[in-house]
Length: 394
Image (cartoon, rainbow, N blue to C red; front, side):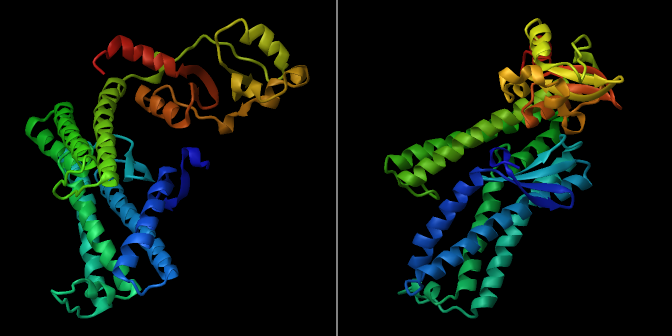
């Protein structure tokens, strides 16, 4: 898979693990920060090589900890009826992508709470292991840094991983949607009101409020003001502001996604699909297709059928991949995407599921197929048109 859409690292119990390109950025930042700053300051006697190796191990184990945090969400979610097929690791941590909203507030609560609990448990476990690896530590009040300097590479690694996981767990408990704490807040509000939309709206507002606090704190830090818990300085300020901006956008988008899901969940694809469109033979020459169909209609993709079966699709993008002067030498079946490689949708599927597929695969339309029979075409613009007419509140 190309980095533009993420790199698939593997699968754990049926959950795909994908690394977003932005993961490389934060990995390099952590690596540089530890190898050139933290570890040389703790251990002035260490060689540069040892600092870099320990820093690389720390960065990898940190993202392993984030992965365990998200896997905990996924596994508990599955026991509560929420299907999670993919976990994406990116520069702000990770996200377990749910195929549907939790069915009850109890499912939401248990699924949200397990993430911070996992991070906190990992943090204390790392600290316990660090204590076992280092043996008794004697801290001189006059020179506390000497205790750190006496640690070996393994103990140093564990002592760094412990607090960072505890901080991760506590940060996720902040009651701002879509952080885990915000989802816990939404579950409580959902339990009290019985209204998922209202609970999501209020939790989203809490998330945006926390995000703007972070942005404001970041601005103060950039201006040279020390902020409690966050510190000060240009780099820290820019980072706090950037995280706040991201959380604000995530809160807004999460609420809009719920509205989209509610609006489209009960709209079948068969209601929105096109049933009158041009179908072509696999033996049609490309120059004929362009002159008689592409130029004479507004259709941008053409189903290729043989014997009443869908065998492929050919789009304007496919045409552009072949030299124009050779269009008379090739047919539709030479340039089409075979049916086996197409994303399709069933007529009884929901329009929201179709929109998710269109967005995830970066497509403009989907063939609507029952068995091997093509029943229609569903375009992104058809879904957006329905939303404009029936869901103006989104």
